[in-house]
Image (cartoon, rainbow over all chains, first blue to last red; front, side):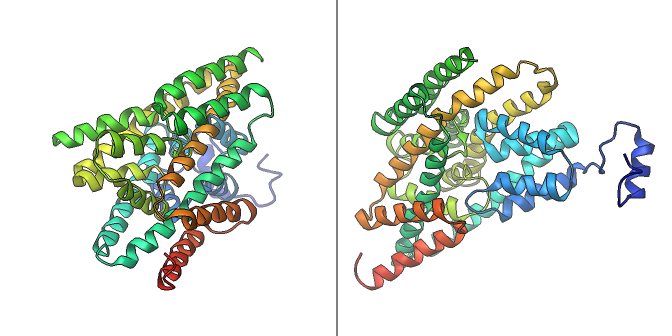
Length: 202
Length: 178
């Protein structure tokens, strides 16, 4: 395979030969590198689209994992509880760097962004004396709801057009929005029912 | 760790396991716990924090960090962050660890497909709760819907959209319409 490659990279090939036969084609990033990559993604992403960012960085640009591996991880990250992007950080970090890689990636996506959000909030608090701050923030909040609602509509559009999944979606909406039942029980009941039925349908 | 931080941790730990999808799904329940049950914030403080969490980069669930920070400073932020991200981090770590042994792909597919309608219902419910908590009336609701339409129809940068929403309100305010 390396011989047919149009642009051979002697350095990484030698490194791979030194380390053994089963090495990945590219050099594996260290835990520190993973931390820095995820820090950069965490700090430059606004309002969503993070999975697309990760795909571009890890699969297309750095070629650190195959697209299939990535998509496998993405479907699991979406199916399991937890925020998609932090789940993906752990999944990718584990694949590329084992336990330390997973921890470094997780800290990279959360800690710097957590510090930034408290700084932003402090700036807003300092400006809280001005009436315009609240007006501007109220306008920002209205527009930001669009991010949540459009994501809900995209997710709803991907629900199969069959009675059972649509009924589960509607029941979940009513339970949370109208009846205001605790989310955890709604998820446990609707989620396990839905997963069980989907499983038996094959 | 102060007592209030322990209370915050205990509120966010179970919420962690119901963040499915983008993490938006837990916002409705966060609102219920923080505003209605514990009274740690007013509804408008919560909406302020929500707006900041959408303006800021990073995962949307950092809203939890911000709420913790607003309620109890550093320890509150730390407790909320560990609470909202910790349990699910251990879960996905465990799954990644034993993934090689997971040959029963059927169960995983059932999990993914089965949870999809639940996640969609929860995200829509979160949006509904947020729209209802707006105190800027029909102008605010109209702006929220317009922003949704723009996001669905165009590849607009969300940061621009949020800044645009803020600018829109400032202009309306100066025109004495709100």
